[in-house]
Image 1 (cartoon, protein in one colour):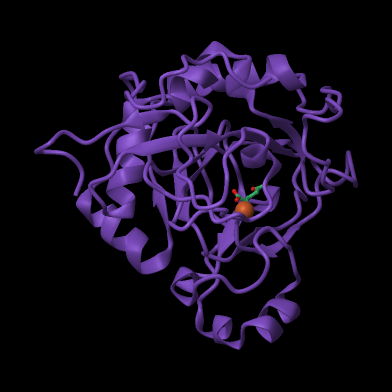
Image 2 (cartoon, helix red, strand yellow):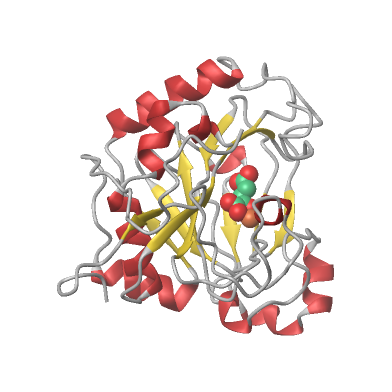
Length: 287
Ligand SMILES: O=C(O)CCC(=O)C(=O)O
Ligand SMILES: [Fe+2]
């Protein structure tokens, strides 16, 4: 499944995608303070509409028709129906995750004049609980798994309107400042989160927000987040690509995605499957 990309890992392969705006300095400041930021109309709603159509080709109009590809899709979760790496087989998803604009936004948000690599992407369709009790559950509080030594950027991109009752993502605002708290990716309930990391009690829980197509949330590594159940009547369509600084070093955290590409602990993730999609200019770049 892995590489249709060129073997060149050094040159940036990002392309310009019209319809993705740049994050503002105010948004960057808020992101630093909170660990997450809502980015209204980051992406042209028409482009998001086209992504939804492509996603529905892959997963069916209701987001529940794709069969798990054994050995490739991650273990299915009761929190959503998922489809791993749509960008490997669909041109539009491929174009979007290789956009210079998303790469530059990741670099601006992280506040370093660094290049950006794309890591992976996934479609997460939280189905109405009333329809599929095993694909619409809440997702417990967690920090995203980060196998490197630097913060990553995750874009949470609703492909359709999302209402609060559909299980939008919620954050413990400011919790990224506490650093890694428990094993990355492990989901726990609120009491357990407070038991493991009592300081989380001082982090305000964000509201479950409403999203129009084009609105996006970006979050960083180590911000604690989770979702409610989908108690609405429509599937909740979300696309979630992740990006990281091009010079980040693999810390040896078990990751089949990285290990199967022959990357060893303490090496950079310099591989064609993690292409550099944005490289700042010598002057005038992010920073
Ligand atoms: O909304 C979801 O289904 C997952 C949210 C999440 O944990 C993430 O985007 O990292
Ligand atoms: Fe997450």
